[in-house]
Image (cartoon, rainbow, N blue to C red; front, side, top):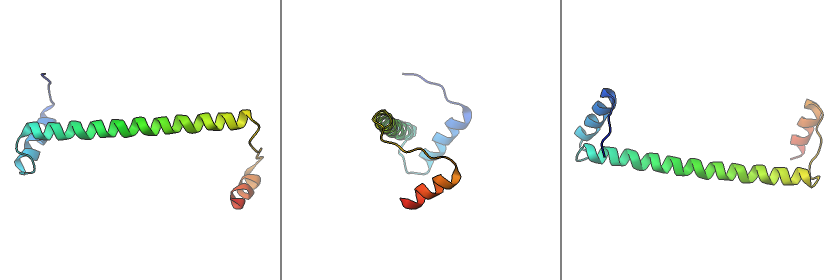
Amino acid sequence: MNFSLTPSLEQFIRDRAATGDYNNASEVVREALRLLKRTEEQRALKLERLRTAVRAGDEAIANGDFIDVNGDEELDAFFGRL
């Protein structure tokens, strides 16, 4: 697999490897990819949780399980009761 890096990313990788925290540039890139993978997995999980919450909200509305709030005063009173 081949890929190109910008000069600034290439320098960043070299700098990270030079700190001694990594043995070489490949380890830096592997760690970056692991972090990207974890970030993407967390994002997908959050998105699925949001979709589940939206479905639950839609079902509640369809079942009439909601209240109407008209204006800031009613909204403040609602949150005051929580």
